[in-house]
Image (cartoon, helix red, strand yellow):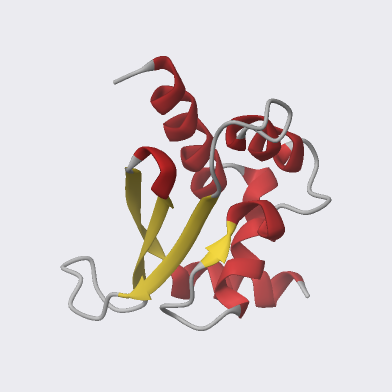
Length: 114
């Protein structure tokens, strides 16, 4: 794994596991399952996430590509109902990673906060 791929992996882990990522996840889950979205657009005006994505995408150097994300509902999860798989993909370098995520629990907690 290259240093750049390691940075992408760290960033995507933060997007699904850190407290600051809740707005990112809320925006992602407001889209339809299976709809590819730009990570940058979902991170718009979220603390330092927007700047981190811009840097990783090469906006400051103009050489790398766009980081995209999609989620798919995962009803056959062995962990139970309400899970999804979140896929991150950067086409220009053929990089991808994924996470299994409890979407139902996230939405339940988000609704309780509102």
